[in-house]
Structures are given as C-alpha cells and as structure tokens.
Length: 374
Image (cartoon, rainbow, N blue to C red; front, side):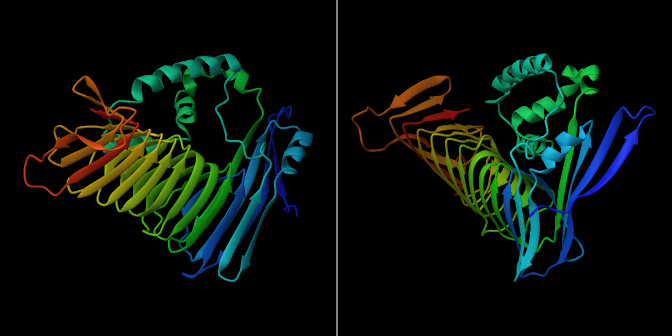
C-alpha cells in the first residue's frame, strides 16, 4: 500500500529555471512506555535516530527534489514503500524501497574529477592505514565520518575537485528520515542496504541483523546487545557490553570497548582502546588494536589466518603470552616464522612479563596468521 504523499513546490528564479519540490512520505507519532519495543524491518533506506523527550516515538520522512523532472520524480516515488503500525507493545516500521531510492548520497563530481579523487584517496589510504592512532584520534575519525572511508574522503575533499558549472546542472535528491526515540526503548533491527545513524547514547538493548548495512553509533551501553552484521561498515564511539559478529565488515571502527565478545570474519577491525573483559575470535581479518586501558585486566584473542597489529606493547606494563602455529611474528624489524606445515600443536612464541606487579594480561592464540608488534 503506497503512503499518502504531501507535496510542497517551491519555484525559485524569475524564469522558473530551477524548481525544488519536497515530498512528505511519513509523519506520525506514537505514545510509548518502558515496555515498548521499536521493531524495524528495513530495505534501502537511510535513517537518523535522535532522542525523544516527550515519551513518544516520532517518524518524519521526506525527500526534496532539486532540478528533477516531474516524470522522473514520480517514477522514483513509485519505488517508496513505507508504513508504520502499533501491535501490542511493538511499534513497527516497514520500509521496502527500491535500490535507486535507497542509494547513498554522494558528492557531485564529474567523472574526470572523480577519477582524480579516487587515485588520491588510494595513495592517502595506503599511507595512513597501518599507522598508530591514539584513542582520541580514532574517536574523532568516527565522530566526523560521513560514511565509509572513501565517501568520507570524497566529502571532506570535494572542494578540491568540485566544478561549479557541473554542479549547477545536476539533478539532486535530499533525503531526510528522522526517528526520535526515548532512551528507554529497546530496538530490534532487520535491515538490508540501509544506512542507520544513532545520535544519542543507546542504553537499552539493540538486536541487529543487517546485510550491507552502514551503522554508526555514539555509545552502546547494554550488556544484552546482539549484533550480526554481514558486509557494510560499523562505527561506534564506545561499547560497554554485548555480543558482536562481523563478516566482511570494512571498516569496523570502535573507539573503546569493554565487557564485550567480538567474533569477526574477513573484516577490518580498528579499536582505539581495549578495556576490561574483552574476548575476540577471528578468521582471516585485519585487526588493529591501538591501545589498552590502564586497568583492562585480561584480553583474549584467538585467530586463524588473521593479521593482528598491536601497538605500544614494549612500553607497556602488562604481561603478554603468544601461542602460535604456522604463524609469523614481525617485531623489532625482524620477521620470524614459527611452526612447519606438519606441526599440529601450538607452541609459545612470545612471552612478555610485566615491569611491575600487574594482573593485566594479553593472551593470544594465532594459527596460520601474522602478528605485528609495532
């Protein structure tokens, strides 16, 4: 069933050469309480979540079309399918948009400019990807990110490549979908090809299953959070609990993490600071652990075909035990490979004792992998 759409037309300029039309696709509110669950079933949509302060959930979805011919605008709106309803304690939102409707916004660059920007991005990314980061520097990357690493680079540097004459001729769509949610509301997410940004600290439980999703959070504070993300990217300033599974997630950026279990596969995981009670299991990912908190207690890592990068290890006070099987260790500009193809048992390949009495320990078990001590 198609949503009822309200239209507002703005005609600018004496010769009416430029038109801007705003279509209101959904505007609705529901009264809620602490037993309410927001249930999201999403396909091809970008949503920004903000905190609500009046014990209501507010949905506000609209699109503004710039220089869009009427027929093309109508064709695109035919691909919008959004509805919301209440059933028991559940507030349900179903969005099933066409892929074209859900496409992420990109900077308006000509093809020649885009080629130059892409080339420069690859040089920039190669140079910066393995460098040490402080916790605060990674957090700042997350705060000011406008999407994936490539999209963020293009937006932040678009002034270098923009062509005003080209931009003035292009059709554009400004899509705005804002949901205001009280902090005490639990959220369940099932999403395909969707971009979800949370601009408030989420205290209640989130359960998320996404495919090619783009998720960005401030703080995730519930110990009962469960995330299963397949492809796409994931960014969060702080995690204080829960279980997170990443498969093909590039990148996964976490400012700080504690009391959490992470299971990653064929992903890129960057963590600004590892805190208390963190377990990480991996298969064939690139992992960058930049810092450990002063009282992180014990960190457990088990990896197969993983490339694990640790930083500032030699200056630290904590203990570290590394067990390897067919594993390469890069440390002090020396490359050493442990274990032959015939061996089946792990052996201790590195032991670091604390400089003073400390219960802080890193335990690493790595098979067929590479450990870089930076």
